[in-house]
Image 1 (cartoon, rainbow, N blue to C red):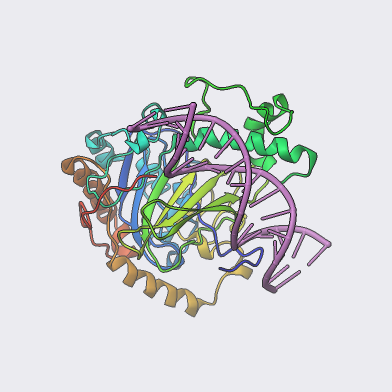
Image 2: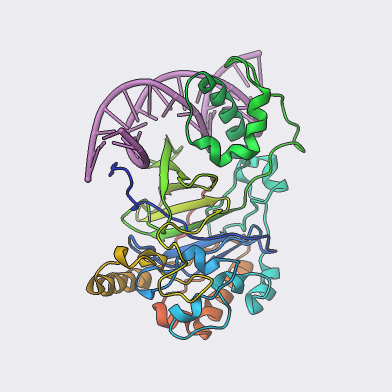
Length: 372
DNA sequence: CGGTTTTGACCAGCGC
DNA sequence: GCGCTGGTCAAAACCG
């Protein structure tokens, strides 16, 4: 891994989540990240997650931008003319015509994720993977809680010492807690009741077929941890957005079932524009961003055109192999959702222009659902 | 030198 | 209550 600092290579997410959607999770046809290929997107509509758009050749803004609630429109420009919804994000938002409608169909399943209570309460509901295979879902409440705690704890520790930048990020929310606990490391913070538990940030996960674990989504990330994943030979990496005040996190891990699949889970919303695309997106139109954040905005950052072209080709190839991972427990549901989504995109020319994605409706490889 | 990655340790939550 | 697991921290190492 490259450790060099500043690499932007790592980044991922460019999605902006906005408010809550109604769907829990839907899988969208994958999009490829810059890194490599396309995959299926699995996102939690409930939280409003958006799928990453194929960045590369498509020009425009990043995934996030795509999703960017703020709307601007990027998609249009980027996707050859498609300009209906200002962004995919919009598409998925309530207005999502069919999808939305179907969304209903999409079941929200509580992610059994580890049975964490929170799962149910919180948003991580995921659509269950109908297909066993895929699902990523995010979920974790535990994480959320524990995070806080850990942080607190750590902060306590660090209070003496220095701290990190992290504080800024989560800071706001957690700082208070920290303050309260100023004691020694052993002092614990007051326990929270379930109700008090910190609410989880919206999460959205998607799977991507890629050789590269950490996909570049236009944002800068800093790795803050890595853990071995149970029942998987591949470790899970934890990243945090490096922008001050932005507490977005993401987890990246490779599927044990299919090593070629990388599961990326985003948590939280970026409070800033993608560093790569200061103004939004290169290709994208004004406000919003479009797809393709990667090569975005700052011309200086843009790769040579031929590179882009090459990249695009790669993406296409990858996308061809992309799977649409469903997460719905009920096949019907899932299928419907993803199919709908895909259809919608295709109908609008998005998929066509982007690449022909294979819609494998439900599934891809029947594997057991993975939980996070 | 600044920023990132690595990695061992710690803690909370959860299941049994 | 105990053990396991997930998530996070932070010191040290690294890199450009």
